[in-house]
Amino acid sequence: MRSVIVAGAAGRMGKRLVDLVSAAPEARVVGGLEHPESPLLGRDVGEVAGLGTLGVPLVGSRGELESCGADVMIDFTAPAATLANVEWAAAHQVAMVIGTTGISPEQRVPLDRAAARIPIVFAPNMSVGVNVLFKVVAEVAKILGDDFDVEILEAHHNQKKDAPSGTAVRLGEIVAAALGRDYEKDAVFTRQGFTGVRSKTEIGMQTLRAGDIVGEHLVMFGGRGERLELIHRAHSRDNFAAGAVRAALWLENREPGLYDMQDVLGLREPG
Image (tube, rainbow, N blue to C red; front, side, top):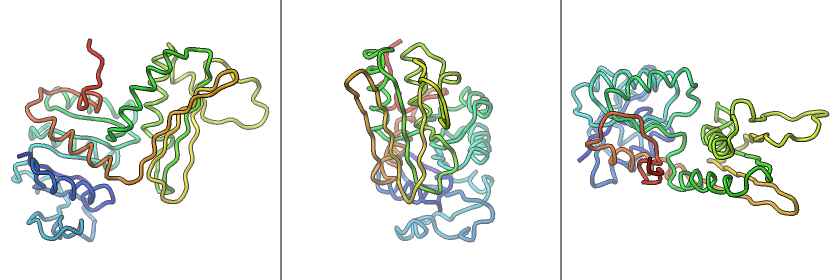
């Protein structure tokens, strides 16, 4: 039985995580963490999630979690909060599943440091379908090569703060690696005015924000006389939460290290 802390337990994703962890026969919620100024502090996390009483109060400080006996923390919060949670988790030997997006390369350094002490699954998208998409996109890019232009389009709800999404960035990085390109140099985020002819190495990155779109990602390979489109659409947040619970269970007895959903799903190429 895996004992789980849910960070951001009163948020939209946090409530779904509480629900799905509670529904998993191999896991249970033992802690719920929220912003120290949340008006819901002290409430039962199950009641906040609409499940009924779980006997677990929502707390506003990591110090209040030290006696809960957690094995793993699941965190879909914000970069600053996640980095603080990682530091606490490493100090208390609590594994982590991190789905937070918008973490910069500089902020990855504390994650790498913590991963020397605890096992961490860090992925821009916990969806099983999206992680299959990652693998398929790499294969398609290698097959089609430089004869096809690549454009990546992502759409999310109007409350999302980072752009492009972490999933879109990962797709761009995968395409760049498959084609021997440099994502940082070849990604094009804005086209306006007289831009000239599209270069052969461009990886177009387009972003939409509207309404309550959960998440959509399209990778277009455009060639002469034809195009191939690979699309993933999320219909609810449950696919992300379910993937995170799967990752939390997978982490049991893992050695310290930084893993992602390719590892969890067995999609990693050997070697």
